[in-house]
Amino acid sequence: MMKITVAKFGGSSLADHAQTLKACDIIHSDPCRQVIVVSAPGKRNVKDTKITDLLIHWTNTIDPQEKQAIQNIISARFQEINPENPTEISLHLKGKFDETISRGEYYMAQTIATILGTNWEFVDAASLIFFDMYGHIDQARTTHAFNLLRQKMKSNAQKKYVIPGFYGSMPDKSIKTLPRSGSDVTGAIVASCLDADLYENWTDTNGIASADPRLVNNPSTVHLLSYQELRFLTWGGATVFHFDAVKPVKDKNIPIQVMNTNNPTGQGTLIVPDTSKNLNYRKSWITGIAAKKDFSEIRISMDGMNEQVGFIQKILTIFQYHGISIEHMPTGIDDISLIVSSHQLLGKIEEIRSKIKEWEPTANVEIHQNLSLITIVGQKMKGKSGVLARITSSLENAEINIETINQSARQTTITIGVKQLLLKKAMQAIYDCCIAE
Ligand code: ASP
Image 1 (cartoon, rainbow, N blue to C red):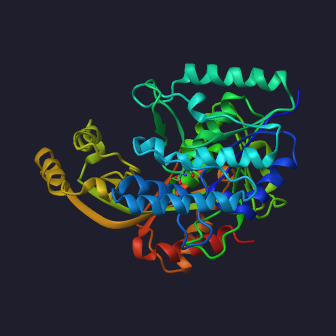
Image 2 (tube, protein in one colour):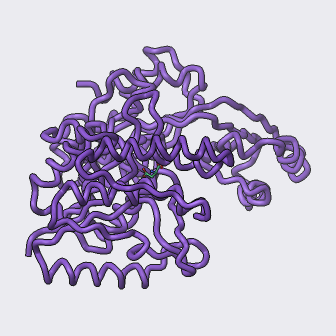
């Protein structure tokens, strides 16, 4: 049987007629691309508005003239995408919010199915992706619906399918949308439920960058990485797609290929379960660097802390009571620091400080804010000597003090805290020393 590739195209890949034709050429160029998942048309330029945002605006406005004006803009966008056979747009005043904002995907899937040709069929996501009453994916109903689709695919190998991303249906048949950018999640669910051989994610960048381009000049593209490395890079803000969109395919070990619709012959980024057998593909032992801002460090020090049984547990209880999750917890003999995202501490700092002092009057508590965390990620770092030396000497040369540091148990990440003001400089220094060839 022919391999199944599920290919998801993002909004920028379908923003207008020219982009949509590029997507269609890509789809036609590989017969394995049997199931396509689409986003709503996105921005054509930086000043443009995504169809989903227009639809949100439509639902939020009560002025009938403004509603009509927005509907006209949306219709014109679809008219431009397929001038020969434009999809007719109708937005219902009685439609619920989620249903209305999902119509960008709904109409785009119909539009591209028409352009792709008669062997392409539109399948409404409402008949494939089901939520339970709590809004979680109803695995049993969803799997059953995809089993039926698979049978259809087996019985007629000529037929191919287009599915709108971003939504599914609730038990009462109403439409429920996923979070913003949710078509990536739809694509992953479709790939997983169809046991696809490959999940392709077509976007407008050459793949996953080894560092955030807002912090590092021209970072290179990572061509191969593991799911775990992706998790760390997306934690630090790699924006190609959200990690939630990886889970369904990760659970089935389906590789993900991130590709650029504007550069279809490029290498892109391949994400696989494990790269450890394939470590020679990359010279650098670092896969990428991720960074996240706005952390605070609560430093607690006290003579003889190491001898006290249950001290850390007491401290953790205070954070648990306040519902604060802890990102890192570097410890010394007589001190411990808890690193948490600053927004979680809002209005709670004094209460936490006094609770610690109430339990341990001799403890010294200091709160340091405006910290950024840099995570250096690389499966290849495990067991390698000199990794930290390279990183720290790059920071020494840039005259940047390390506020805190932590190596993960798996030895595949090292997290360094620096003053927020120095983040960009620190990122560039580590990148230049450890990744740039
Ligand atoms: N159209 C939706 C959004 O703009 C979903 C998506 O594109 O994935 O967030």
